[in-house]
Image: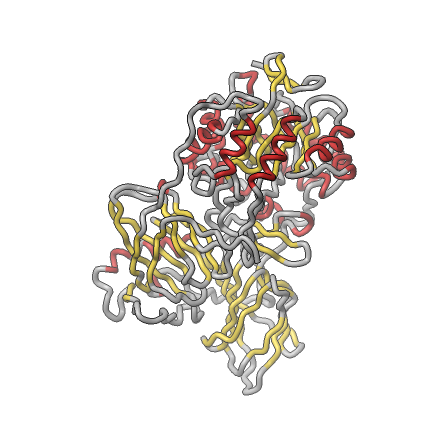
Length: 605
């Protein structure tokens, strides 16, 4: 088969063809659920699946490339082909996507002198190696070799960032040299400046927008005089960030805009057809004057919800598509309530899951990046001069949230979102600062910024030096909490790894080996007759992380909007399952409740 760009249309085997695509990120969906989501997208009337490639998922540490399991892009593309659909691949290297660091690995952005997203030799060297690895997977799966891939995108909304045409030209060269023969595209928001700065000769321009379709298509046509018009990101919903509300868009308005797009003859890629989840610590953040970390759920108010169930938007879009193309007669089953369970939790002794304090001294606190720490927590410690008077502690910046204690007694927090950088320290000598990295910025110039305590802290205006820094691996800590089961049967008494929580009162938070009051590990067990999607209710917990059977579901936070975490049935098993919690603040209930449906938060403030 062949796929080409004609004077007016995409051409499939020489015949006019409309691309009806939906974004589905393999790295946000459990691999055992890929086929289900792809099939349901087809039932909406789509003929194509689009995905980004997340470099930092494939190569979190330099040279440690992984394309297996969750990162098996080849298998994902093969499943698309098995469904009789086409594929669009967007390898970046920058992807935005509300994903951690915009998809760029932290080792890359920490390289000395690296110039991101431009013709800078250090950056280009690493990008070229990355792209060749991706294209080794993509090239044999192109349509002219019998595979599903029909389009490959160069960079991502580059006109919103820069205008280094030579950089884009080099990406095109590397792509073609690697054996990619299908048409190439760029994408930009439809403004004259962005379309001009983000375009490169020989590559087809597409647009990204969610409203005013006629106007945006007209702007796109001025910059792309021939060939098919395509909205390569039709924003059918929006993302959520902590402390806000759950964002939705009107079903009727979105369907009307889709109708206008298709009536104009345009092709479309729904962003998203299924959003999925920012499992683990993969959420990004925005910062346009205020730091706003992205929530764990990436439901996006998409046609398929976070658990892959069809929404009213699914059926509205399906009806519109049916006016312009054949739609399968089959429809997906509607959502059913998930099993409801209550699981008592027990406290796990800190020594069973927290590391000992790292006693190496640093003049200034090392950043997460200097420590090459990929997880979310670092505990810093310094000795203060003895005095009975309060003192002013100032930081250049804390990225992104900190809990402070003196001699093991908590005395405050600092929030980057709230622009907090100073605090009064009570009398005492042993200062500890637990810093959480809440998500790396995924957009604009702050990509790649360092995390942790930035600069030299000041105590009453004088430099405070002599710090220790103890990285805490959240996933490892949570797994250790969950595996404390062997001690559970014999540890109900003092000195054991577990102690039953008093269900009548808030949990007592013991001082840990790091001396951090509030940092608590909890675990529980529950039985299932068969695996099934679940929703873990976090409404009565403070801030932290949850794991089921050792799988890190992601972050929770009482600030919302979301009050549940999605648990894919694929991580569960018939029989005994474990739930583990790493709580950073206060847990008002020692119960893990699994509820019937997701609670993603209020729809307005």
